Image (cartoon, rainbow over all chains, first blue to last red; front, side, top):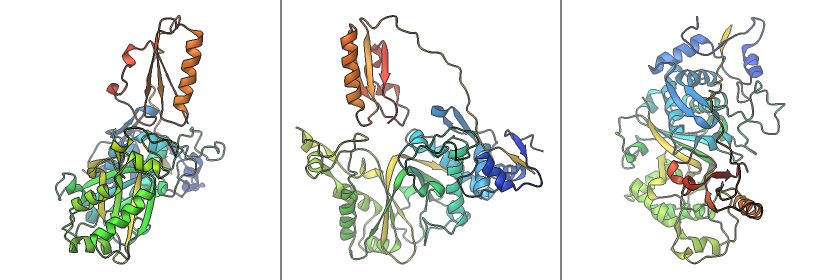
Length: 363
Length: 90
Protein backbone atom coordinates (compact mmCIF):
# COMPACT_ATOMS: atom_id res chain seq x y z
CA UNK A 1 0.00 0.00 0.00
CA UNK A 2 1.35 3.40 -0.97
CA UNK A 3 -1.72 5.54 -0.55
CA UNK A 4 0.02 7.70 2.04
CA UNK A 5 2.79 8.58 -0.40
CA UNK A 6 2.35 11.16 -3.13
CA UNK A 7 4.96 9.78 -5.52
CA UNK A 8 3.89 7.58 -8.39
CA UNK A 9 4.65 3.91 -7.99
CA UNK A 10 6.48 1.90 -10.61
CA UNK A 11 6.41 -1.88 -10.87
CA UNK A 12 9.66 -3.74 -11.41
CA UNK A 13 9.33 -7.17 -12.89
CA UNK A 14 10.56 -9.94 -10.60
CA UNK A 15 12.99 -11.01 -13.29
CA UNK A 16 14.61 -7.56 -13.42
CA UNK A 17 17.32 -6.15 -11.20
CA UNK A 18 15.85 -3.17 -9.30
CA UNK A 19 19.25 -1.47 -9.14
CA UNK A 20 19.52 -1.62 -12.92
CA UNK A 21 15.94 -0.33 -13.08
CA UNK A 22 17.00 2.75 -11.10
CA UNK A 23 19.83 3.33 -13.56
CA UNK A 24 17.40 3.08 -16.46
CA UNK A 25 15.16 5.70 -14.90
CA UNK A 26 18.09 8.13 -14.59
CA UNK A 27 17.77 8.34 -10.81
CA UNK A 28 21.39 7.74 -9.86
CA UNK A 29 24.57 9.78 -9.53
CA UNK A 30 26.43 7.11 -11.49
CA UNK A 31 26.88 4.83 -8.49
CA UNK A 32 24.35 2.13 -7.56
CA UNK A 33 21.49 3.26 -5.34
CA UNK A 34 19.30 1.50 -2.84
CA UNK A 35 15.97 0.92 -4.65
CA UNK A 36 13.38 3.22 -3.04
CA UNK A 37 10.62 0.90 -1.94
CA UNK A 38 7.48 2.41 -0.41
CA UNK A 39 8.18 0.77 2.94
CA UNK A 40 11.70 2.17 3.19
CA UNK A 41 10.47 5.65 2.30
CA UNK A 42 7.62 5.39 4.76
CA UNK A 43 10.01 4.40 7.57
CA UNK A 44 12.28 7.29 6.73
CA UNK A 45 9.45 9.82 6.86
CA UNK A 46 8.15 8.35 10.11
CA UNK A 47 11.56 8.78 11.74
CA UNK A 48 11.59 12.53 11.17
CA UNK A 49 8.18 13.14 12.69
CA UNK A 50 7.03 15.36 9.85
CA UNK A 51 4.34 14.98 7.22
CA UNK A 52 5.48 13.77 3.84
CA UNK A 53 3.97 16.77 2.10
CA UNK A 54 5.72 19.34 4.29
CA UNK A 55 7.56 21.73 1.99
CA UNK A 56 11.31 21.74 2.52
CA UNK A 57 12.46 23.92 -0.33
CA UNK A 58 10.82 26.12 -2.92
CA UNK A 59 12.93 26.54 -6.04
CA UNK A 60 11.21 29.12 -8.22
CA UNK A 61 13.90 29.25 -10.91
CA UNK A 62 12.93 25.69 -11.90
CA UNK A 63 9.33 25.65 -10.69
CA UNK A 64 10.07 22.93 -8.18
CA UNK A 65 8.62 22.40 -4.73
CA UNK A 66 10.62 19.89 -2.71
CA UNK A 67 8.81 18.05 0.08
CA UNK A 68 9.87 15.83 2.94
CA UNK A 69 8.80 12.85 0.84
CA UNK A 70 11.07 13.85 -2.05
CA UNK A 71 14.04 14.17 0.27
CA UNK A 72 13.18 10.90 2.02
CA UNK A 73 13.10 8.98 -1.26
CA UNK A 74 16.51 10.28 -2.21
CA UNK A 75 17.90 9.65 1.26
CA UNK A 76 16.79 6.03 0.99
CA UNK A 77 18.51 5.73 -2.37
CA UNK A 78 21.70 7.24 -0.92
CA UNK A 79 21.82 4.58 1.79
CA UNK A 80 20.74 6.74 4.73
CA UNK A 81 19.29 5.16 7.83
CA UNK A 82 15.86 6.66 8.66
CA UNK A 83 17.30 8.58 11.59
CA UNK A 84 19.61 10.52 9.28
CA UNK A 85 16.71 12.21 7.50
CA UNK A 86 16.39 15.24 9.84
CA UNK A 87 19.98 16.19 9.01
CA UNK A 88 19.35 15.91 5.28
CA UNK A 89 16.17 17.95 5.63
CA UNK A 90 17.98 20.69 7.55
CA UNK A 91 20.65 20.85 4.85
CA UNK A 92 18.08 21.16 2.07
CA UNK A 93 16.19 23.79 4.05
CA UNK A 94 19.42 25.76 4.47
CA UNK A 95 20.02 25.51 0.72
CA UNK A 96 16.65 27.19 0.19
CA UNK A 97 17.77 30.26 2.15
CA UNK A 98 18.41 33.21 -0.17
CA UNK A 99 21.92 33.60 1.25
CA UNK A 100 22.92 30.15 -0.06
CA UNK A 101 22.42 30.74 -3.79
CA UNK A 102 20.67 27.50 -4.76
CA UNK A 103 20.37 28.01 -8.48
CA UNK A 104 24.11 28.59 -8.90
CA UNK A 105 24.83 25.39 -6.99
CA UNK A 106 22.47 23.46 -9.24
CA UNK A 107 23.23 24.90 -12.62
CA UNK A 108 26.64 26.53 -12.87
CA UNK A 109 29.38 25.69 -15.35
CA UNK A 110 31.76 26.02 -12.41
CA UNK A 111 32.38 23.11 -10.06
CA UNK A 112 30.06 23.84 -7.15
CA UNK A 113 29.73 21.22 -4.42
CA UNK A 114 27.65 21.40 -1.27
CA UNK A 115 29.55 21.40 2.00
CA UNK A 116 28.15 21.18 5.50
CA UNK A 117 29.44 21.40 9.05
CA UNK A 118 27.49 19.42 11.64
CA UNK A 119 27.48 20.52 15.28
CA UNK A 120 25.75 19.44 18.46
CA UNK A 121 24.45 16.20 19.94
CA UNK A 122 23.27 14.76 16.63
CA UNK A 123 26.90 14.03 15.76
CA UNK A 124 27.23 11.39 18.46
CA UNK A 125 23.63 10.22 18.22
CA UNK A 126 24.20 9.24 14.60
CA UNK A 127 27.75 7.98 15.10
CA UNK A 128 29.20 10.58 12.78
CA UNK A 129 32.94 10.83 12.35
CA UNK A 130 34.76 14.02 13.33
CA UNK A 131 38.23 12.49 13.41
CA UNK A 132 40.49 10.74 10.90
CA UNK A 133 39.36 11.04 7.29
CA UNK A 134 36.47 13.27 8.32
CA UNK A 135 36.25 14.58 4.77
CA UNK A 136 36.91 11.19 3.25
CA UNK A 137 35.25 7.78 3.09
CA UNK A 138 34.50 5.32 5.85
CA UNK A 139 31.54 6.57 7.86
CA UNK A 140 28.01 5.77 6.77
CA UNK A 141 26.30 8.86 8.18
CA UNK A 142 28.91 11.32 6.89
CA UNK A 143 28.89 9.81 3.42
CA UNK A 144 25.24 8.99 2.85
CA UNK A 145 23.89 12.27 4.22
CA UNK A 146 26.06 14.10 1.74
CA UNK A 147 25.06 11.79 -1.08
CA UNK A 148 21.38 12.21 -0.23
CA UNK A 149 21.76 15.94 -0.77
CA UNK A 150 23.24 15.42 -4.22
CA UNK A 151 20.56 12.91 -5.22
CA UNK A 152 17.93 15.37 -4.02
CA UNK A 153 19.50 18.00 -6.25
CA UNK A 154 19.45 15.63 -9.22
CA UNK A 155 15.99 14.20 -8.76
CA UNK A 156 13.94 16.70 -6.78
CA UNK A 157 15.51 19.92 -8.03
CA UNK A 158 16.19 18.77 -11.57
CA UNK A 159 19.95 19.32 -11.36
CA UNK A 160 20.62 16.62 -13.93
CA UNK A 161 24.32 16.61 -14.94
CA UNK A 162 25.89 15.88 -18.29
CA UNK A 163 26.12 18.94 -20.54
CA UNK A 164 27.34 17.85 -23.96
CA UNK A 165 26.22 14.27 -23.35
CA UNK A 166 22.49 14.80 -23.52
CA UNK A 167 21.99 11.55 -25.39
CA UNK A 168 24.17 9.45 -23.11
CA UNK A 169 23.47 10.31 -19.50
CA UNK A 170 20.27 8.34 -19.16
CA UNK A 171 18.37 10.97 -17.22
CA UNK A 172 15.03 9.48 -18.10
CA UNK A 173 14.38 12.15 -20.68
CA UNK A 174 14.80 15.01 -18.22
CA UNK A 175 16.67 18.11 -19.43
CA UNK A 176 20.23 18.84 -18.33
CA UNK A 177 20.47 21.55 -15.68
CA UNK A 178 23.84 20.92 -13.96
CA UNK A 179 26.08 22.29 -16.71
CA UNK A 180 29.39 21.95 -14.85
CA UNK A 181 32.28 22.10 -17.28
CA UNK A 182 34.48 19.66 -15.35
CA UNK A 183 32.69 19.19 -12.04
CA UNK A 184 34.48 17.89 -8.97
CA UNK A 185 34.45 14.77 -6.78
CA UNK A 186 32.89 16.75 -3.92
CA UNK A 187 29.65 16.62 -5.87
CA UNK A 188 29.14 12.93 -5.02
CA UNK A 189 28.86 13.03 -1.24
CA UNK A 190 29.52 16.68 -0.49
CA UNK A 191 32.11 18.08 1.88
CA UNK A 192 30.88 16.47 5.09
CA UNK A 193 32.53 18.15 8.07
CA UNK A 194 31.67 17.07 11.59
CA UNK A 195 33.23 19.22 14.28
CA UNK A 196 35.18 17.67 17.15
CA UNK A 197 33.59 19.59 20.03
CA UNK A 198 34.84 17.36 22.81
CA UNK A 199 38.62 17.66 22.76
CA UNK A 200 39.07 21.44 22.57
CA UNK A 201 36.39 23.17 24.66
CA UNK A 202 38.42 26.39 24.59
CA UNK A 203 37.72 26.54 20.86
CA UNK A 204 33.96 27.08 20.90
CA UNK A 205 31.99 24.99 18.40
CA UNK A 206 30.90 26.77 15.26
CA UNK A 207 27.21 26.69 16.13
CA UNK A 208 27.85 28.27 19.53
CA UNK A 209 29.89 30.98 17.85
CA UNK A 210 26.89 31.57 15.60
CA UNK A 211 24.50 32.03 18.51
CA UNK A 212 23.07 28.57 19.11
CA UNK A 213 23.17 26.70 22.40
CA UNK A 214 25.70 23.91 22.75
CA UNK A 215 22.90 21.36 23.19
CA UNK A 216 21.25 22.30 19.90
CA UNK A 217 22.03 20.27 16.80
CA UNK A 218 22.86 22.56 13.92
CA UNK A 219 24.19 22.36 10.39
CA UNK A 220 25.96 25.13 8.49
CA UNK A 221 25.68 24.60 4.75
CA UNK A 222 27.77 26.21 2.04
CA UNK A 223 28.47 26.02 -1.67
CA UNK A 224 32.13 25.53 -2.51
CA UNK A 225 34.49 25.34 -5.44
CA UNK A 226 36.57 22.87 -3.48
CA UNK A 227 39.39 22.83 -1.00
CA UNK A 228 43.07 23.46 -0.50
CA UNK A 229 45.12 21.35 1.88
CA UNK A 230 47.92 23.34 3.56
CA UNK A 231 50.79 21.68 5.40
CA UNK A 232 51.43 23.61 8.61
CA UNK A 233 53.85 21.24 10.30
CA UNK A 234 56.86 23.52 10.77
CA UNK A 235 54.90 26.32 12.43
CA UNK A 236 55.26 26.08 16.20
CA UNK A 237 53.12 29.02 17.33
CA UNK A 238 49.61 30.28 16.67
CA UNK A 239 51.02 33.38 14.99
CA UNK A 240 53.19 31.29 12.68
CA UNK A 241 50.30 29.01 11.70
CA UNK A 242 48.07 31.92 10.78
CA UNK A 243 50.87 33.68 8.92
CA UNK A 244 51.40 30.62 6.74
CA UNK A 245 47.69 30.19 6.12
CA UNK A 246 47.36 33.83 5.10
CA UNK A 247 50.29 33.46 2.71
CA UNK A 248 48.39 30.73 0.88
CA UNK A 249 45.03 32.46 1.05
CA UNK A 250 46.39 35.67 -0.47
CA UNK A 251 48.03 33.60 -3.20
CA UNK A 252 44.72 32.07 -4.26
CA UNK A 253 43.75 35.29 -6.02
CA UNK A 254 40.41 35.19 -4.24
CA UNK A 255 40.60 38.42 -2.27
CA UNK A 256 37.43 40.42 -2.54
CA UNK A 257 34.69 42.19 -0.64
CA UNK A 258 32.25 39.31 -0.62
CA UNK A 259 32.21 35.64 0.26
CA UNK A 260 33.25 33.40 3.11
CA UNK A 261 36.00 30.98 4.01
CA UNK A 262 35.76 27.62 5.76
CA UNK A 263 38.86 26.44 7.61
CA UNK A 264 39.14 22.94 9.08
CA UNK A 265 41.71 22.90 11.88
CA UNK A 266 43.16 19.49 12.71
CA UNK A 267 44.10 18.53 16.28
CA UNK A 268 47.85 19.12 15.91
CA UNK A 269 47.20 22.75 15.10
CA UNK A 270 44.31 23.06 17.55
CA UNK A 271 46.70 21.99 20.32
CA UNK A 272 48.96 24.93 19.50
CA UNK A 273 46.15 27.46 19.34
CA UNK A 274 44.87 26.32 22.75
CA UNK A 275 48.37 26.25 24.26
CA UNK A 276 48.97 29.82 23.07
CA UNK A 277 45.66 30.99 24.48
CA UNK A 278 43.96 31.80 21.18
CA UNK A 279 40.21 31.63 20.81
CA UNK A 280 38.42 31.00 17.54
CA UNK A 281 37.58 34.69 17.52
CA UNK A 282 41.32 35.45 17.66
CA UNK A 283 41.98 33.06 14.77
CA UNK A 284 39.20 34.50 12.64
CA UNK A 285 40.39 38.05 13.25
CA UNK A 286 44.00 37.14 12.47
CA UNK A 287 43.06 35.43 9.20
CA UNK A 288 40.90 38.35 8.13
CA UNK A 289 43.49 40.98 9.03
CA UNK A 290 46.34 38.89 7.62
CA UNK A 291 44.66 38.65 4.22
CA UNK A 292 43.43 42.23 4.00
CA UNK A 293 44.95 44.21 1.15
CA UNK A 294 43.93 47.25 -0.86
CA UNK A 295 42.48 47.02 -4.34
CA UNK A 296 45.55 48.86 -5.57
CA UNK A 297 47.83 46.22 -4.03
CA UNK A 298 45.90 43.42 -5.71
CA UNK A 299 46.10 45.07 -9.11
CA UNK A 300 49.78 45.94 -8.72
CA UNK A 301 50.52 42.30 -7.93
CA UNK A 302 48.83 41.04 -11.07
CA UNK A 303 45.55 40.01 -9.50
CA UNK A 304 41.94 40.70 -10.33
CA UNK A 305 39.26 41.82 -7.96
CA UNK A 306 36.51 39.29 -7.53
CA UNK A 307 33.72 41.86 -7.26
CA UNK A 308 32.82 40.87 -10.80
CA UNK A 309 32.43 37.20 -11.67
CA UNK A 310 34.93 37.23 -14.50
CA UNK A 311 37.23 40.21 -13.99
CA UNK A 312 40.28 40.44 -16.17
CA UNK A 313 43.68 40.46 -14.49
CA UNK A 314 45.97 43.44 -14.76
CA UNK A 315 43.38 46.19 -14.61
CA UNK A 316 44.69 49.72 -14.16
CA UNK A 317 44.87 51.11 -10.66
CA UNK A 318 42.15 53.73 -10.33
CA UNK A 319 41.86 56.71 -8.03
CA UNK A 320 40.42 55.45 -4.78
CA UNK A 321 41.78 51.91 -5.10
CA UNK A 322 44.06 52.58 -2.13
CA UNK A 323 40.95 53.10 -0.04
CA UNK A 324 39.19 49.89 -1.08
CA UNK A 325 40.00 47.00 1.23
CA UNK A 326 39.63 43.38 0.19
CA UNK A 327 40.22 40.15 2.09
CA UNK A 328 39.68 36.42 1.87
CA UNK A 329 36.14 36.83 3.27
CA UNK A 330 33.57 39.59 3.45
CA UNK A 331 34.06 40.04 7.19
CA UNK A 332 35.65 38.50 10.26
CA UNK A 333 32.37 36.71 10.94
CA UNK A 334 32.45 35.11 7.49
CA UNK A 335 35.55 33.09 8.40
CA UNK A 336 34.03 29.79 9.55
CA UNK A 337 36.26 27.57 11.69
CA UNK A 338 35.75 23.91 12.59
CA UNK A 339 38.07 21.59 14.50
CA UNK A 340 38.15 18.13 12.93
CA UNK A 341 40.50 15.43 11.77
CA UNK A 342 42.71 12.64 13.00
CA UNK A 343 45.30 12.86 15.76
CA UNK A 344 48.37 13.03 13.53
CA UNK A 345 49.09 15.51 10.78
CA UNK A 346 49.06 19.31 10.64
CA UNK A 347 47.11 19.60 7.42
CA UNK A 348 44.74 22.53 7.55
CA UNK A 349 41.97 22.35 4.97
CA UNK A 350 40.44 25.49 3.53
CA UNK A 351 37.27 25.56 1.43
CA UNK A 352 36.48 28.45 -0.85
CA UNK A 353 33.03 29.73 -1.80
CA UNK A 354 30.86 29.22 -4.82
CA UNK A 355 27.92 31.16 -3.52
CA UNK A 356 26.89 31.63 0.05
CA UNK A 357 26.09 29.78 3.24
CA UNK A 358 23.28 29.37 5.73
CA UNK A 359 22.87 27.82 9.16
CA UNK A 360 19.88 25.76 10.23
CA UNK A 361 18.88 23.91 13.37
CA UNK A 362 18.33 20.17 12.95
CA UNK A 363 14.92 19.23 14.36
CA UNK B 1 8.71 -5.16 -6.52
CA UNK B 2 7.22 -1.68 -6.27
CA UNK B 3 9.41 1.42 -6.30
CA UNK B 4 8.46 5.05 -5.82
CA UNK B 5 9.60 7.71 -8.28
CA UNK B 6 11.96 10.18 -6.54
CA UNK B 7 11.72 12.79 -9.28
CA UNK B 8 9.89 16.04 -8.54
CA UNK B 9 8.08 17.38 -11.58
CA UNK B 10 7.85 21.11 -12.32
CA UNK B 11 4.88 22.93 -10.89
CA UNK B 12 3.71 24.99 -13.82
CA UNK B 13 2.37 28.39 -12.93
CA UNK B 14 0.24 30.12 -15.55
CA UNK B 15 1.59 33.49 -16.58
CA UNK B 16 1.31 35.98 -19.37
CA UNK B 17 3.64 38.22 -21.33
CA UNK B 18 3.95 41.88 -20.49
CA UNK B 19 2.11 44.26 -22.85
CA UNK B 20 4.09 44.90 -26.04
CA UNK B 21 5.30 48.42 -26.86
CA UNK B 22 3.96 49.85 -30.11
CA UNK B 23 7.05 52.01 -30.57
CA UNK B 24 10.39 52.63 -28.85
CA UNK B 25 10.30 56.34 -29.60
CA UNK B 26 10.18 58.39 -26.44
CA UNK B 27 10.67 55.40 -24.19
CA UNK B 28 13.14 54.72 -21.42
CA UNK B 29 14.98 51.44 -21.85
CA UNK B 30 16.72 49.51 -19.06
CA UNK B 31 19.86 47.56 -19.89
CA UNK B 32 21.02 45.25 -17.13
CA UNK B 33 24.20 43.16 -17.47
CA UNK B 34 24.66 39.88 -15.61
CA UNK B 35 28.32 40.34 -14.50
CA UNK B 36 29.63 37.84 -17.03
CA UNK B 37 32.62 38.59 -19.25
CA UNK B 38 31.72 41.12 -21.99
CA UNK B 39 28.15 41.55 -20.76
CA UNK B 40 28.61 45.28 -20.22
CA UNK B 41 30.32 45.63 -23.59
CA UNK B 42 27.41 43.81 -25.23
CA UNK B 43 24.94 46.22 -23.65
CA UNK B 44 27.08 49.14 -24.83
CA UNK B 45 26.55 47.87 -28.36
CA UNK B 46 22.85 47.32 -27.81
CA UNK B 47 22.51 50.87 -26.53
CA UNK B 48 24.37 52.23 -29.54
CA UNK B 49 22.16 50.31 -31.97
CA UNK B 50 18.96 51.40 -30.27
CA UNK B 51 20.11 55.02 -30.22
CA UNK B 52 20.85 54.88 -33.94
CA UNK B 53 17.49 53.38 -34.89
CA UNK B 54 15.01 54.92 -32.46
CA UNK B 55 14.35 58.17 -30.69
CA UNK B 56 14.96 56.73 -27.23
CA UNK B 57 14.28 59.17 -24.39
CA UNK B 58 16.87 57.61 -22.12
CA UNK B 59 18.64 54.50 -20.88
CA UNK B 60 19.02 53.12 -17.38
CA UNK B 61 22.02 50.85 -16.95
CA UNK B 62 22.59 48.34 -14.19
CA UNK B 63 24.08 44.99 -13.19
CA UNK B 64 22.45 41.99 -11.62
CA UNK B 65 23.67 38.75 -10.12
CA UNK B 66 23.12 35.87 -12.54
CA UNK B 67 22.62 33.18 -9.96
CA UNK B 68 20.35 34.45 -7.25
CA UNK B 69 16.95 36.03 -7.00
CA UNK B 70 17.53 39.76 -6.67
CA UNK B 71 15.42 41.78 -4.25
CA UNK B 72 13.12 44.43 -5.67
CA UNK B 73 15.29 47.08 -4.02
CA UNK B 74 18.33 45.90 -5.98
CA UNK B 75 17.18 47.28 -9.34
CA UNK B 76 17.57 51.05 -8.97
CA UNK B 77 15.75 52.97 -11.65
CA UNK B 78 13.83 50.02 -13.06
CA UNK B 79 10.43 51.47 -12.18
CA UNK B 80 10.99 54.29 -14.66
CA UNK B 81 11.70 51.94 -17.58
CA UNK B 82 9.19 51.14 -20.31
CA UNK B 83 11.13 47.98 -21.26
CA UNK B 84 14.16 46.17 -19.88
CA UNK B 85 16.74 43.98 -21.61
CA UNK B 86 18.91 41.51 -19.70
CA UNK B 87 22.00 39.62 -20.73
CA UNK B 88 21.49 35.94 -20.06
CA UNK B 89 23.85 32.99 -20.06
CA UNK B 90 27.65 32.89 -20.18
